[in-house]
Structures are given as C-alpha cells and as structure tokens.
Image 1 (spheres, rainbow, N blue to C red):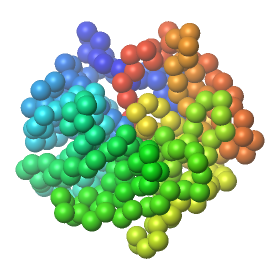
Image 2 (image 1 turned 60 degrees about the vertical axis):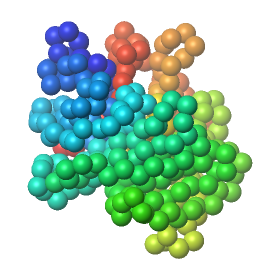
Image 3 (image 1 turned 135 degrees about the horizontal axis):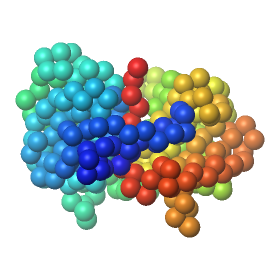
Length: 289
C-alpha cells in the first residue's frame, strides 16, 4: 500500500489474489499511514497532533490523543483486530518509535478505548526488534540474543521477564505471531532460514524451541522486521509450510521469494513494479472479514 494519489486513491497489492486494487480514501490525504495493522491503520499528520485509527475499507475513523515528539516513519504501529470504538472494551493499540535518531531509547505508547492519554514505556532497544501483541511487549537484543518480555498492560512499572538466547548462533531479524504463539525468525534471501517458537509457560522458565514445520500456515515477511502468519486456505496462491519474503532486488525490480521449510530451498516469484508500484509501498494491513 502506498500514499494517496492526487485523486485520493490508495493503491493495494493483494497477496491473496495477486492483483492491484484501488480505493477512494480522502481521509488519508496528507497523512502518514503506519502499520502493520488489522482492519484499522494508524493515520497521523506530520506534527503528531491529530492521530486516529482509520478503517480503509469502511472509512470509519476513531480519534486518538496527540503524540508528543512524534518521529514519523521511524514509528511502527500495532493496531487492534477488533472494533476500537470509544467507551467499549477492546485491545490496546500500540505505537513504537525511537525517541531520537541517534538514541537507543525507544518508547512504546499504548492506548485503549476510553483512555484520555497514551501510556508510555521507555526501554533501551540496543538495535532490537520491537514487537507488541495482545498486551505483551517483546524486545529482542541483537547483541546478546536475549528477549525481554513485558506485560505492558500493567503500565510503566511493568516487570520484565528475560528469555535466554535460543540454541543457535544465528540472529533473529523478524518476530511474527502464529496460532502457536510468538515466532522468532532468521531469514535472509538465498540462505537457510530458521524458526523458533517462544514457550512461555506462565513466565516460568521461558525458552525458545526450534520449529521444524509450520504445517498449513505461511509466513509473509516485509520491511521493518514485520510480517504475519496465516492459513494458506485464506491465501489461495500460496503454499503451506513456506516463508515468503518481499524484497527489492538490485535491478530495482521486486520479488516475493519463497522458502520451503521442508526442502530448505528458495524459489523466486518476480513481481512487476509497473503492476504493483512497490517502489512507493508504505506498509501492509490485513482486513478482517
């Protein structure tokens, strides 16, 4: 998905059918759209004074409190899958960003329907992967390979559970949530991929276990260490037990490279930038039906 055109059209490339779609979205005009997201995407002006959750399909919009010291494209939003109407019970939405370009301190801002302001949690990222899901905040340290697990619903005084490194010398570069739980993934094109599942056990002796198969699921990976896991029954053109990596190649073309977890090999699926316009792509979202 990329920025609105002059006629307020948003362009999407659908992974499920392999086609480009366009929708009219005047609400998105002049605003940054930040994901990944499900149903509602994070929309904000450059100053951070008027953020909102925007449903790009229904055009419904939910206002959010202003964000101090907003840093634009350095942010990642984790929006809820439900209906975040005011005064209703619902999941948090989370917005993560670096405090400064040269700083290792990152801020996780949380908001839930009915909140008048953001709840902020600051952590030393140390070049980490940041991931939020269902109230839990995961921080992967690229130097030590340790993972901090924080129950962000507790607030600024939330205790931290430290997960020791997995039994591999390889570094994670993606976190993805699957049906079984959090997956840590090492994935670079042309090289063998490794997948690990975080076994938490009520925070008693949490540890990583190597995954040999993801069954009838597929994993999609894109920029900013983001991605998702889905049943192949919902993604008709994809195969199960595979990882799909969207990347920009050296000749400025794009490909969706497929890695077979079973066979341990890669297959390249070329994608025409003329059709998909990936050179202006911003983020992805999964509408819930």
